[in-house]
Image (cartoon, one colour):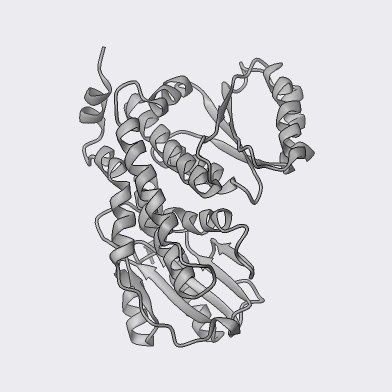
Length: 347
């Protein structure tokens, strides 16, 4: 029987295992990074649009959950070629592209220029770096060498520090130090043989994960987990949110048969969710189980909400990684995405 080290050695040629273990170092880089000065008054801003795709966008979703009790102006995550119609000179557009070559994000940048929006970019370089230099737009340079989805520590912490420097939120130094400490501790735990995320991954082999989170609370974790299962584990996975799923998707469980779709449900739970949503989880659990479907409940025991959400993000990243190598897939490989981008670039 192969050990997990054997699976890692055989199916992870780019050593994303070590990247995951050292994710806390990305946070340390973001702390030491340089941040440009901004030539606008934040009081002039009435909305923030974070524009990006994939691994470059999820930090925006996470920041919305993370700062849900602190942000006093609307924050929207935009995953498209165009800006919403309301975006104008009072809108701050944060263009986030790890590679700097994401065509949707570059399209948004150009549109934001035409509308006289305030713009800040986050990237490692590429075309985005060139056009920011030409247009004298501030850019925050990220550490190079990662796949975007494995660079969440960089992209999230950069956004968090940026929000603090813009005086949108209080200083986050203490919170960031706590995240580093937590991820260091979890790295030691999660990288060991027989770890909790490894056991979850083993339990998911042969099943389609269906993930339920809580809207505007921890839905970023569900979105992230679903995407990581897709890209890392090469697996279809589905995600929905409570209470919305109680108004539609719940009916799908009435006729569910395991022979039609071999599924396991994952609840992303937290003790601070609204009492009625707690009750909803309790009510729908036996309904789902009656269809012969196992429910896996994931929650963090950390005292602080911010730490709990970062704990779950890190845990589910490890689950998706282990599920990849256990299924004998390279977690780095994303051939279909490369094929799609090459086809799109053809004239």
